[in-house]
Image (cartoon, rainbow, N blue to C red; front, side, top):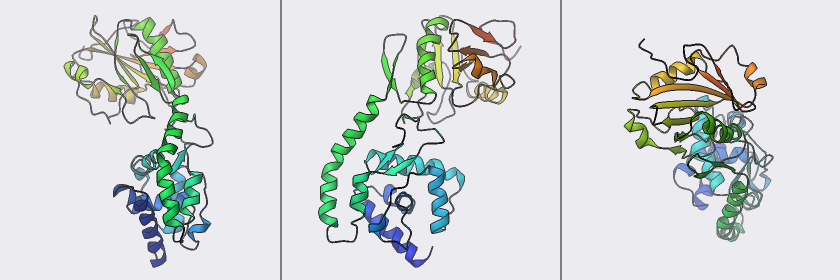
Amino acid sequence: MTPRQRRRVEEARQVLRDLNFDAERSNERSALVLLALLDLTDKRSWSEAREPRLRTVEIMDWLRAHYGKAYKPNTRETIRRQTLHQFVDAALVVLNPDEPRRPINSPKSCYQIEPRALELLGAFGKDAWDQLLRRHLSEVPGLRAQYARARELELIPVALADGTAIELTPGGQNVLLKQIVEDFCARWTPGGHVLYIGDAGKDDPIFDKDALLTLGVELDKHGKFPDLIIYLPDRNWLVLLEAAASHGPMDAKRHRELQTLFGSSTADLLYVSCFPSRAEMRKYLTDIAWETEVWCADNPSHLIHFNGERFLGPYDASA
């Protein structure tokens, strides 16, 4: 970076400190992300800040082009989880302003500076900064509540078999997850206990770690889980389900991964790929692993079995 670019990054860091962000959210990475979201190069003043709508990969491309900062592709998740999430929570940035129902893990997910925050940041370095900053900080709780209410209105209600009500974030595979929980489980795993439900829009999924430990399975919550885990105590079955709405089904590679991940289980394992429709399933017929099951939400009372001596049952991997 040039000296002018470094000065601009330091200004952005000071802005974030003034906004009461912690050290991680006012470091160089977060300052650069803020500059990208303002389309603010070192050749333009803060009053010329703009509000482009950018995906994470576009933020990284912008930083490479304008500040010579070439982040590696695997940094994208760090930027999203360690900077953008907190900017959204603080009402500094709006997630998916063009389509609030878009799932957070969608490749189209985008971020944009909150309009009132843009007005504030345009005043950085001017006499009005301190006064506008105090006003903005006093309004942040209300802004956060406003956006939280908007997100809550979009949540997908789901009823578990025991009557417990939960909510999933909107869009993507969560629409199919609702159908799996309410339709598949009612027909094919009655009396089953939900041990895990993944929700890409939430940091804390439903995760009964202790119940899995009693079955000999120790998992890190950040591991590559199936989308849904159901335990049937009367049969001692652990049913691992993948929602193949926004990604593919349980192919041979994924089947082996899950066999390894759950290899210590004292319960027998079943593997199920779930599709919204048979038409969607047909796109992936050649990918679906043998010795797994397929369920389609548009034909909920039927299962499709991919080979083996059982219609629905575990396989003895040692046989």
